Structure formats: structure tokens, C-alpha cells
Image (tube, rainbow, N blue to C red; front, side, top):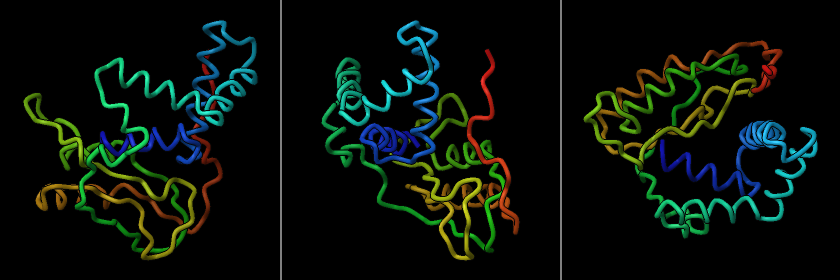
Length: 187
């Protein structure tokens, strides 16, 4: 969901977000810095980006970008401005094991069903709804653990979304071997 993603981005730039997202951003950013000839090596690009997160430069830049687009940059210091829905439902695992795989397309469709995206061009996006992934591929789970949290406004849309989420997670007794988000770089 839109507000949920912005909140996650802010937390990541504060160094408090999901580590897999931070790693992805640093790796993509390092590639861009090298391609743009701002750094000579990927390592120096990574260090530059990691330092900008640690010293607050990245967060300051986000504030500037929000202001440049006419947004309220106070959201960086007060994420409650995002107005994420108070209505939420935890989707729990029915069994124990490891998350072997997840169907990202179905997560997107389930989020759209909540109102976070458009099914038809004329649909209005609800910025307050969406899905926060709690467990991801490779994570161990026990029956009853929360896999994801659905933020919603409509019970009907929540129920439609849950039907899709039921098919997102493949849970196995065996931990998957390769759970890296980045498998390689195509140059």
C-alpha cells in the first residue's frame, strides 16, 4: 500500500527498516553511482550510501524531494501524517516450517483488491490501505505466526484480499537454499 510503502522507506532511510530492503537499495544505488561515474567501484558506492543512511544525509534528501514535489516533509519526522488505516487484520500461518516461496503477483493483486491499486482506470486509490509483509521467503514460521498484516477500510474488500493471500505462501519443512533477493547483475 502507498502510505505503508512510504513509512517503510522512511524507516529504511533512518536505518530502522527491513534489512533486505536496505540491502536492495544500497546495491541498486551503488550500481547507479558507478554507471553515473560518481564512484569508481561498487564498494565505494555502497560505502557512500551506507554512510548517507548513518549520518542522516539520505533522510534529509528525502525531505527535500518531498518538498520539491509539493508534499509535506514533516511526514519524515511524524509518519502518523500518512494516515495508515486503523483497521487491520493479521493473516496467520496454518502450519509450521519455513517460507519456501511467495507469489509476489498475488500479493500485488490482494493489495489492489484492498484498494491500494486500480483494477480499472477510473478506480480511486486508497492511500491508507495495503499489506505489510511480516514474514518473507526463508523465514521460519510456527502455526499461528503472523505472515502479513492487511490494512483495510472495507470488510468486503478485506475478505476478497484474504482469499488471494491464502495462495501466496508456500510453507515447507525444509529451509530453502537460496533466499537472496539479488541473484546476479546483468551488464
